[in-house]
Image 1 (cartoon, one colour):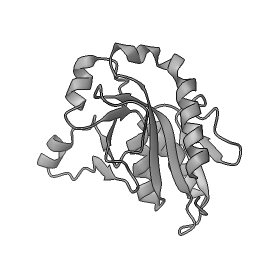
Image 2 (image 1 turned 30 degrees about the vertical axis):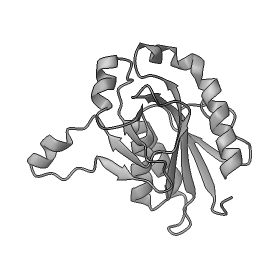
Image 3 (image 1 turned 180 degrees about the vertical axis):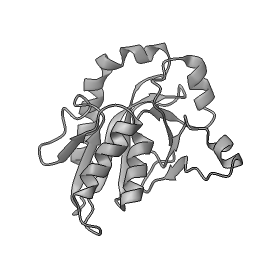
Image 4 (image 1 turned 90 degrees about the vertical axis):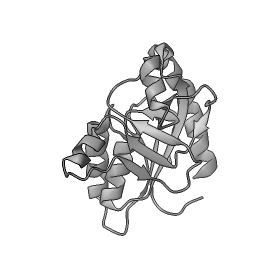
Length: 184
């Protein structure tokens, strides 16, 4: 159990629907911009040196058939920014963030809802899972000086099965809440 204050962050109310009442919950809305702004606003209310541990819970698409269940990514990458091109033009771009206490998996974050097997296979070269907020949450935490953990539950295969995501959210929310109860 941790003694630091904890802020549980999710994109949707459904993903946080089973979080125990003892946790402060922030629902950001879907996408990188919503997540970054909401987390930054929430962290700005804390004094430097007294930041909460931010735990981003949510669903993710599996980029490899072997992935199922719960993951704590060790890195998050921003998959839909033209980092190489921008770097070649002389602009440094942070497109990968390392995370403590991870399990070795890599989470790719982008604003596109991945439901196409060809897109999934291209992302699978660089990552294990895909979501729409994780990198943004980790980036906001890094800028504000807060520790961050990502906890993701596979809800689909990031192919046409992703279109059934709404029906999978509650099962994932239960697994995520159980993890919170057992680990924090």
